[in-house]
Length: 188
Image (cartoon, rainbow, N blue to C red; front, top):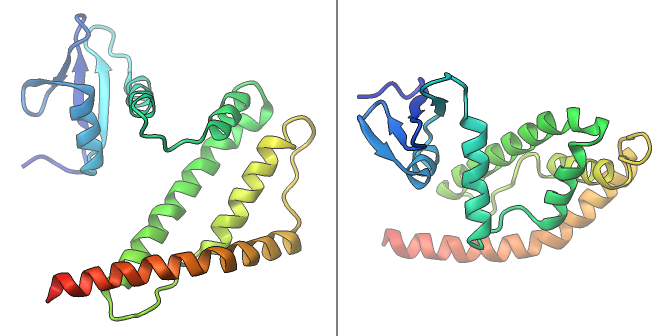
């Protein structure tokens, strides 16, 4: 069995074909996306030069999914990302995105954990913090790029987080109730 901690090594040949060194066969970008969805780390290197091409191919996978209508990234976010390449704010964006995705994954894990328990109304830990962080990011990307970046006012962020939570909470409760009904019907 393959070592799950070690990245799956994919070599790109001069013909641009991608070779899975673990299974000794050629793979496609969709195969690589499948490995990643399964939780595998993937490293793609050029056979001749040894250059790491992982970032290039991951961006290509994302671009292909977006072009097929599987839109995860709204146009305004893509626009803001393009802007960060030409500003000083770009240096903080990778860390922010990584932290945001980690918080999202943690929140999803907690929500799924709570849904499997007999708890009728699970809470999403960190929801307010995530919302405040997103607001700070949007403020930095829209207004902070032309001037200096400043964090949102703590009171305003807390108030906006609370209002957003109240508005979305009813919708989340309805969806959760429907999911719980489906789960209880499936377990019978």
